[in-house]
Image (cartoon, rainbow, N blue to C red; front, side, top):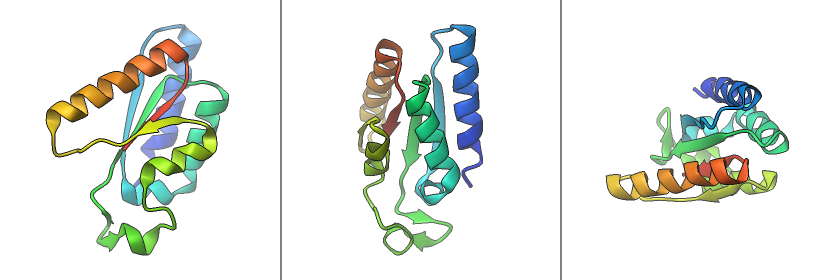
Length: 119
């Protein structure tokens, strides 16, 4: 339910500390996108320029509740904008588009030493 987001940021910090070129891919659903841990992790990731891609799998429902009923912001990628984080959205039903968008996000993180949010 979103607990992995803090761990993902911690792993990204470890990779940065070790000086690797590794990028952490942190997956979570739209239901977890309203938890405080996500915002803390995104804020610190932006401040510390951590090598992480936040991947929001948005199926429009979190635990049976529609995103419109649970979130003031239904466009998940907008949640990253408050942290100055580059973000984009891709059709999750097209595996090749997801592959290309993920590849671009990872390349951006490596090149710019900044996190990325992909919905």
